Length: 260
Image (cartoon, rainbow, N blue to C red; front, side, top):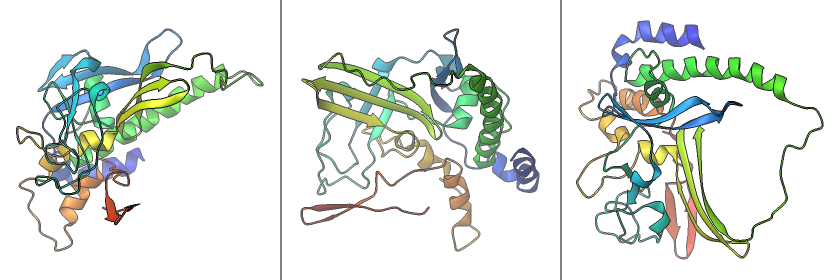
């Protein structure tokens, strides 16, 4: 992987920076170590300034998405009510924000938050960070394997609490993933999710701010009728749109898997 991405960086040097975002990054941290630290640290970077990550600064809104208007509100107060006729809507992706800022998540964001070496903020900059991160995880996995105890319990199926609320954060392959859930009498009462692709490809917010993904292709010079340039940039985020692209046919809702 690493020799391949280094060759691409040399061959297509313009893409090292082409397709860069807005300079804002998020990592919620991942892979807790025995000493309590994490392999990937958590934090926020706003225009080169590092800050600790704090959940209460997260909001979502649907100003230009196909939902009943709510927000910007924290996921605990959020509702998800589809509205195909929303006049300003153009997507099913909501607009997550952190203190009002659109953020980039993923391997490049994790590297920036961790203050690790990067080669650029554009398309190949993301691919390079992804390759180096794969090496980092592979090396860590060799240590994790030594901690496994054959025959030990790996899943706790004992339910001791029928009601409660909790937040789950993880650094998924594509970036920061958050879950907010309330349980009452053993049943889900409230559930909200903000996926990595929602961060990277959100709809525009009430102030007109666009996502990092949309910003990354603004002003892109298209030289191929197949839009190869745009495709290269968008793919560098490793997007997943299967949960955001839908067809409504009467009372039936269909999900489309779209190749970008």
